[in-house]
Each structure stands twice: as structure tokens, then as C-alpha cells.
Amino acid sequence: GANFTPIVPEDPWNPFGPLANRTENSTVESLYKNNTANCYVVNNAGTYTFPLVYGNAIKGNKVNPSAYNGDIFVDHKGTKISSPFIPGSYLTSTAKAVVLWSDAPQLVTEVSLSSTSQMMTVAGQNVRYIKFRVPKENITPGNAVIALYDKDPSKGGTIVWSWHIWATEMPKEHTYYSGDIVLDRNLGAITSYYQEGVEVEGLYYQWEKKIHIPRIQPV
Image 1 (cartoon, rainbow, N blue to C red):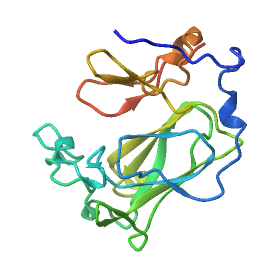
Image 2 (tube, rainbow, N blue to C red):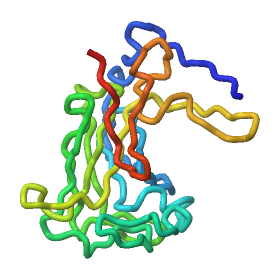
Image 3 (tube, rainbow, N blue to C red):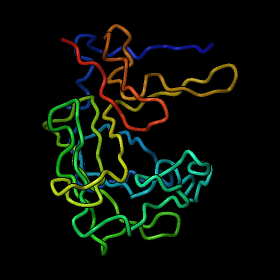
């Protein structure tokens, strides 16, 4: 087992206050810190970017083939993924990034896809990126999913990939005696405070699919 100590907020009746009490970052922050992911954590209002990379296919600023090798790792066309980078050929001139869903109103806004002349360098490659904003007036623990469409979704576009944006205090890590490391909360949970009921449940997933399904909302 592991030794878990729940994070008890200063005010148990308002465990979600600290995020809203922070100032909004004045500069654009890249969420790419030498590693890519399907889920990015933000715990401050501001404007952020992340590259068009499949999941955690970049690790330590190097290609991580173990993240996509194998027949089960296919793209939206059903083609086996052979590179960490989402092919530019998949994106038409009307390709678009949008908020697919959010469980907190206007948590993520101003989503955009960089042009072919706007790139960030990832593992030695120039890669397009997605930019979004988390406004100070809206930030609260919650979740949003940003989807990349191959063309304008109103014109029949297809989702190429999606990313989970998780607004939460930075989760703490706990190590089992076996050496396995887990977070102090479920993926997508908006608190680790165990008395908050469904708020600690996090998101749901369908077997063998990476699409994030919103948690049950309290009524």
C-alpha cells in the first residue's frame, strides 16, 4: 500500500479558491517542457501553447517510440502511427482547434491553431502548435478537451487528435512500496479532498479509447 495524506484546504467549504486568487500570466507559456502528453495541467490563469504531437511521443526532448509502436496505436484514419508528429498533410487550410467540451463555463477560451509559418521546435523539428487562454475571471478547478479538426468542423471536419486541459492544484506524487508512483487524485478530479464526493472521481474512459468523458455532475 501507500501512505496517502489527503490535501485538506484551508477552508473545507471552498477548496477551489486558490486558483482564482492568482494573477494572470502576462506572457505566453509553453506547456512543452521537453515532454509531451495527452493531458496538460494548468494551475494559473494565462495563455498557453502545446505542440501537435501524439500523446507522450516526445520524452526528454527525444522521440519516444514506445508511446506509439504497436498495431493498436492508430490515427484518426486507422493508419498505424509511425511518427510522434501529427502529419501536416492531414490538415487542410481550414484546419481548426476548438473546445470540444468543458465542465466549467468558459474555462478555456481563445483557442487557435498556429499557421504553417508559426512553429515551435520540438526534438529538433519545427512543429505547429495550439494556443489557448484560461481567463482569470473564469479559472476554477475543472476540465476541458481541445480537439484538432482536419478542416472546419462546420464543414464536416474530422477530429485528428484531442488533448485534455486539467485545471487543478499541481497534483502530488505518492510512491507505493513496489516503487510504482501514483498521483494524489484521479485524472480530472477537481480536488483530492476526500469529503467532496463526486468531485474526487475524475474523468471516465472507454476501454481502448483515449477520449475523455466528463465526470458525473452533482445534482
